[in-house]
Image (tube, rainbow, N blue to C red; front, side):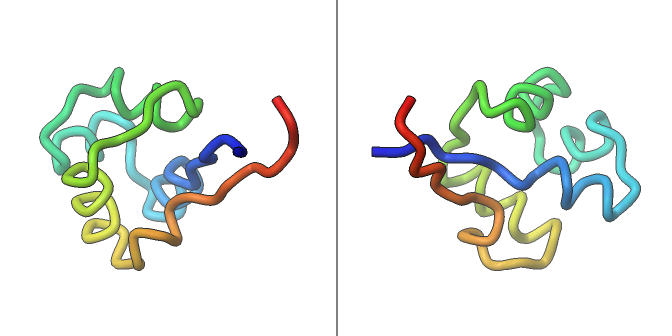
Length: 70
């Protein structure tokens, strides 16, 4: 099973948002956004849905599976 890779940083930068601005909109800490962007944290469904709503994309667009062996 591969690792989930997030596209959150790309979407955030496209919206010209800081990590803090995104964190404030989602209702989480800036550090959590940083960890999401570095693939060190898997978001809850609630957070993933909020991110998808903010970026106006389907939730599955924010994530992809890395099929390379770890």
